[in-house]
Image 1 (tube, helix red, strand yellow):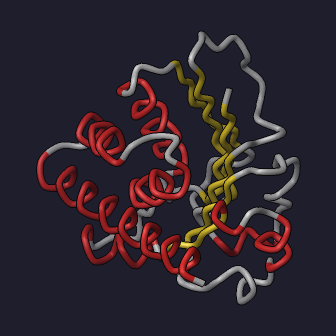
Image 2 (spheres, rainbow, N blue to C red; image 1 turned 135 degrees about the vertical axis):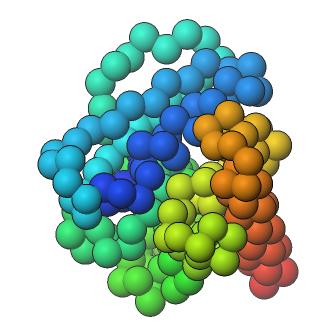
Length: 193
């Protein structure tokens, strides 16, 4: 079973991202669950959402304390909350930022974990280009598909179409595809070094 923890702030769509990730897993014939954990439900407050993906029914209902995958929608949380707590060795880390891990002040993460399992993607900037709003949730799922292969880009885009309609769906699909390409290029450059 894969356990995924998503960190963000209220208003960024971290809960929607977890739900779309579970829909993408369902699209691929897997079992999944997604649920949030709210401290304060006000806009801008830290929010954590969880997703589990498995090939068998999932009976657990408690928060994900030892994630295999960590997605950070708001990089300002890196020094406010221990987002890396419990992260499994060999796990995946995806951070919404155009800056690298060293610049973000969390270089030890990129040195501790396998370099091909950690990445940053400028999800907010990509969302602004496609959506005109700073909503990085679907964008990050495209990046996750490239980084981990846990779900495919096609499954992510199916989940987007299930969640949104019309131009909003099309813009999110394009943004997810751009993030997928961005992370794919980042990983290819890493292999070339």
